[in-house]
Length: 284
Image (tube, rainbow, N blue to C red; front, side, top):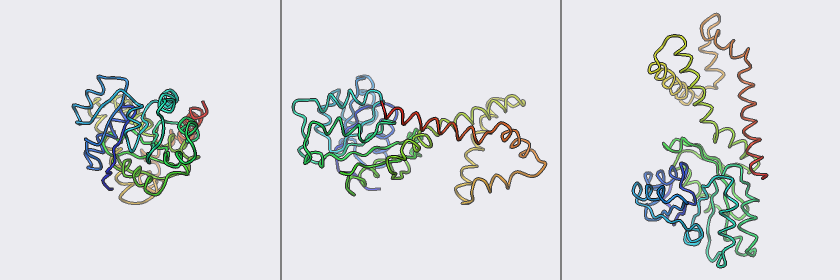
């Protein structure tokens, strides 16, 4: 990871925007004085200013103009309004290189280009590279997983900047844009699947007589241990599952119930549904 000697502007200061700001500062990737956050919620902005000592503004157009790197961290359904306001300003022009990184789920690069490129010529467009990224909520504790995809104007330097920003929060993989809906379904939404599974384990623990506190500790620690074992052993999840599944034993009894209920197919269908929703969001 390298330090970023750029001014970074966040349009949108919600949970993910704050996660990125906190990670950039705590990792030393970028100083607080180089970061500005923009949001329509003035109380939210004041909280971020007190917490991180960053600059704040409610003027997204001004922030876009002043920033070397602009991170679009608003909800997908308001991306159009935000970019129309910026690109529709009378003085909208690109006079020096500016990198735009969008983390709005499902919003395609072509849609971002339509808003930002239509008012400017081809020379200016080459100065305004766009990278679409999909981080996830474990980024809040610097254990995130992100996917990213650049448009044709993004150079190796632009990709390195985006990579430095995203690796401040965890890991990042570069994908073809066509794969980002699947990335969204796998890692973007993935933590919720894990949380749901842990919820279910805790409920099951209570049903078989454990206290909620003990069931919670057992479930969370077991999940953490299983992931660590998977990482450190380097074996496939299938192999490790078979190691603990003794014929005629307790684990086999549980796995048989999961198989009867088509557990794996349910997970496959759930992730496919999330990917399809991501595609639908991008098509709107």
